Length: 563
Image 1 (tube, rainbow, N blue to C red):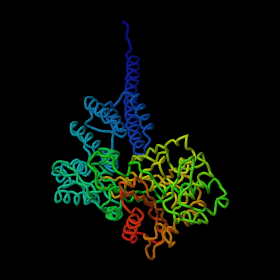
Image 2: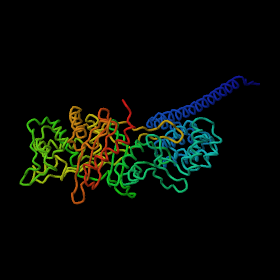
Image 3: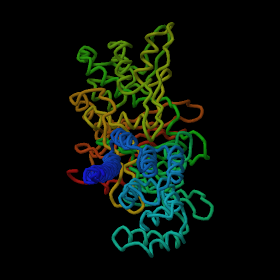
Image 4: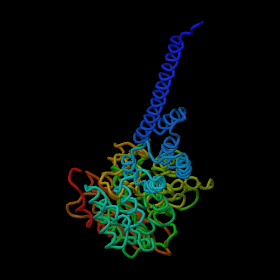
C-alpha cells in the first residue's frame, strides 16, 4: 500500500492563500492610495482656482482624471473650474454629468468655495452650484453664502430664512441690515458716489431705474454711458464710482440755464468727479460731453505748449502789434478786439490775443503744432474700460489757404474740434505737470456682504504730452487770466483761492457764441481740473467767468490741504 503525504499540498495552498491575501491588500492599498491622490489633486485644483491660477487647476484635474476613480467628484471639480472661468453653460453640463456619475459626497470645500464666489459677487455661480448640490442630496453650500445670493437676486424672503440659519458674524449682520433696508425702501442701491451716497438704484418690484441726480442720466443711460460698460454681476452687487455729488450738483447749478456740459476730474488720478449733461437728455441720446465743439481760445494753451516744447524763439515774435486783424492768403484773419502792443506770451494769454497766437503757430509750422495736438489726444482712439471717450478732431486745412488755416487752428477755430471731456483732460494734463491720467468712473467693485472691494481701479498714465517745465510756464499765464486787471477771466476771481483759467469763445454769432473754458484749482495743489461748454451764452466771456466762480465757490470747501 502507498501512502500520499498532504503536507506539501497544504504548504502550497497556504503559500497561495498568503499571496492572494497580500495581493488583495496591495490592491486595496493601491486603490485607496489612488483615491487619496485623486482627492489631493481636487484639493490642489481648488487651491489653484482660489489663487487665480486656472491653468494649474485644469492641469491638476486632468491628472486626477487619469486614475479613473471618483469620476463624479472630478467632474464636479471641473465644473467649479468652469464656473471660475465664467463658462457657466459649460459648468452646467459638467455638473449634470457629475450628478449622473454620483456626487452625493464632494471633494470640494463648499464653505470655502461659497466664500470665494461671494467675495467676487459671483452670485449666478453660487446659484448654479447650490442647485447642483441640492439635486445630489448631499452636502450644500453654507446658508450665509446662499443668503447673500438670494438677497442679490431679489429673493428677500428666502434670504431672510437663510440668514436665520446662518452663523452670526459681521458679514451676516451687514446682510441683515441690508435686507431690512431693502424691505423698507423697496429698492436696491447699485451705484454710489465716492462718499457712499446712492446715485442709481433699481426698484425691487419691477426693476425700474432710479437716478439720484437727473443730470447724471446721460452719463449713465445715454449713448456710451456707464451702464453699457457694466455686466449683470455689477447690477447685483455694489459699484463705487469716482463721482462726487457735491461736485456734480455744483457744476449742474453753475451751468444754470445754458445747454451744454460740465466735466470735472481729479488731475492726480483721472477720477471723474462730475459729468454733467444739461439739460438732461433722453435715454439713448448722445450726451453733450461726447459731442464735438469748436474749442476756441482754450486751444491757445496747446499752441503755447507746442512752441515751448519745440523751443520756438518767442523773443523773436514779440512784441506783437495787434491791430485787430491781418491778411493771410488774401483773406482777413480777425482778432476779437484790437489789443495794441502785446509784450510776451503771458500777456498774450491774459488778454487772449488771436493775432499773437496765430503768429506763434505760423512761426512753428503745422507739422509741429499737429504733433503736439496729437500728443494731447487729438485724432486718437482711446479705448477705456468704463467710458467711451471721443477725442478732438483735426480737420484738413484747405491747401488754398494754408497760412490762414494754420492761424485758425492755432487759436481753435474752423478746422479743429474737441469734446468737453477731452477739454477737461487738457486741463488735467496742464495741472499735473504734463501727465494726462486715464479718466475713469469706476473706483471699486464690492459684493453685498463685504467691506473690502474685489476690484479697484488703479491710476494709470494715459499720455505724457509735455514736460513739467512747460506746464509751469503755462500755469503762470493761466493764473494771470484771473489776477490781471486785463485778464479775460478776472470776473471769476475768488478771495483766498488761487487757480488757473483759460477762457474761450466759439460758435456762430447769429445764435450766440458758446463759452468754452478750462481751468484747475487750487493753483499750487491741483485737486480738480474742469472744462465746460455753455452753448449760446451771449456775452460768453462774462457768463463763463460767472459759471467758474459759482462752481469753485461751492466746491472750494471740498479741497483738502496738503492732499
